[in-house]
Image (cartoon, rainbow, N blue to C red; front, side, top):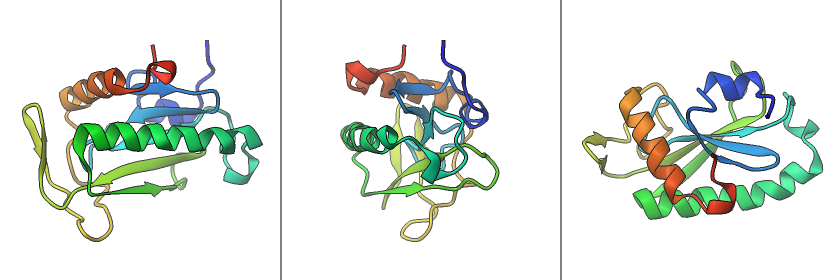
Length: 150
């Protein structure tokens, strides 16, 4: 069993976890500022990017490729932003924000990228628990099997 850091738990892991790697976990962001917004959280206790083990940087290349492939296939985003904002949540993490020029739909939900084409509106979007649960299930199923969270 993995020891979860406070940032992983703050973003509702393990309930929102869609993939787990040796050094990183991918979670559905509980506040969907844009459809398919994720959080990429380092698994360790580090609170400084420079303190991550060197293997985490090597693995990150693979994780980013998985993120972009799954989000592109699932939502066909126009751009993608990676925001490292560690002011409130202390452990190393990125907010992964797919960006859309036009509103995008998933099942019964439709979300607009209110910040397009500027900065993402991280406070906007939807915190609908059913949306987050459905996204977690759908993205987990779309994730490469070797890294899919159980």
